[in-house]
Image 1: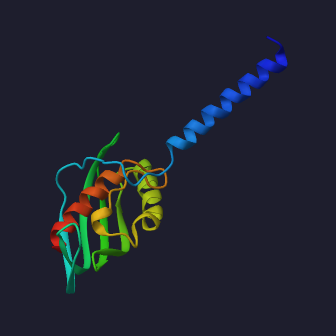
Image 2: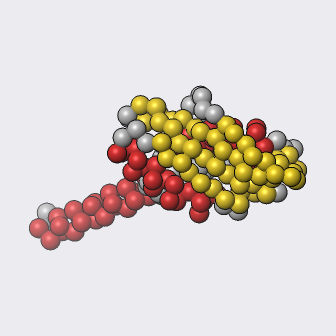
Amino acid sequence: MRPSVRKSVFAGIAGLSLAGTVAGCAPSATENTPAAPAGSAAATPSAGSSSLAGSGATYKDGTYSADGNYVSPNGTETVGVELTLAGGTVKDVNITQHPSNPNTRKFQGEFAGGIASQIVGKNIDELNVSKVAGSSLTSGGFNQAVEQIKSEAQ
C-alpha cells in the first residue's frame, strides 16, 4: 500500500472514531434510567391544580423539592431538585448540589447548568432525562427526585 493511501485510510478511520465518540456523548431525553432507592421529598404547593389529559394524573401548582440518589464510581451521591409546576408543566428548575468529591462537584455542576433547557416548558409526566451536559449518572438521581415530586404534587 502506498504511503499516501495509507495516510488517507488512517485519517478516515480517525475521523470515524471521533464522530462515533461525539455521537455517544449527545444528550438523549428518552432513555430509561433506573433510580436508586431512598431520598426525601418536601412540597410547598400553591392554590390550583391541573388534570393532565391522557395521564389521568392531577398535579397541584406550586414549588416542590426532593433529593434523589444515584451511584457513581465514588459511591452513593445525592442531588437536590426543586421544580415549579403550573398546569402540570415545569416552569422552573433549581438543582442543589451535594458533591462528596471534586469529580462529583464537576458533573453535578454541568448537570445543573444544562437541565433547564431540557425540561422547562415540558409536562412533568414527560420528564426522563438520561444525559445532560456530559453528566449521565446525575440523571438517575434527578429522575428519582422527579418521581417523588410527582407523588407529592398529586
